[in-house]
Image (cartoon, rainbow, N blue to C red):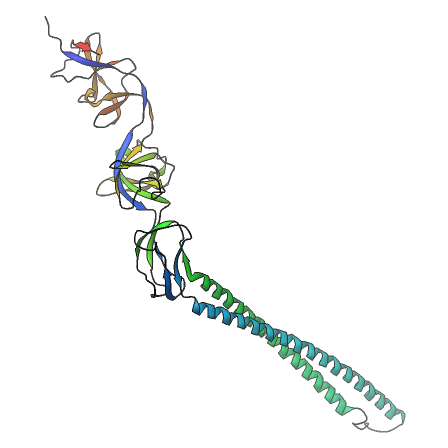
Length: 382
């Protein structure tokens, strides 16, 4: 009686399989900025939250700088505005005065010229020779009238120049007032976003300038994790045309460390293969890593990542042991084993996903064999 090895067989079925790609990385803030004042002065108050590791909310008051110099500048600018307005008002009054004087001088000249014309006509009517006396033709009165007219015009010109100068001074004073008001507002520093303090170098009484860095702060609305992946694993992910780099609406990610777990999403790829490792990094985003009521995903924490791949439809999932050397599986048919070449789409330590070469209902040998001969007879147990 011929010996027939006993083997374990599995009837396969077509199914949908979602691969999971593994990686690891360090949690980082999306960005980090220097908190620096926009005005110079002495620090008079610092928020208790402005310490390394402190958390703050958007528009929370963080620092106050002594506003004394800027309040003085505002009062000075206000006084300059009033002075410029007074100068303009005085100039307008002088213009009105000059116009009145010019009208009076013009009327006098007209009157004197009329009397002079009449005097010359009478002189000729009387048959007298030569020019009439200067006193008779109102020479002195005309000179006085013309001098008054010129004086009035000069007054108007000077007054208008004074008005324009006052107008320019008003513009400069208003600009000074606006700048002083802005500087006063800048004496109180507010948080530009909800965040945390990485480090700080400020204390009450410290003299600061615009070049001073008071603290380094990080937004906590989102965290990012850079996840390097082998190039062969990228094909399993829904990354579209993003391998050139840029933002995407990518696959979901599960981040774990110990017993803690967070959900995230791939948002971009770096689009560059690292020379040393031949890997390309994708970046995962996690919303509200420091939110209350759950585990804190602290910046700097090392995490494991499980990235959801693109679903594969109509595939066969087998134990890893079912795949033999040369990319074949042993198929059981009528009590005999036959090798069949299959196309492997994905595999890990425990499973292998077959894309072609098998169909639903095929029975695949799972047992290890000391030797294999095509068409060998076996005894199968399901």
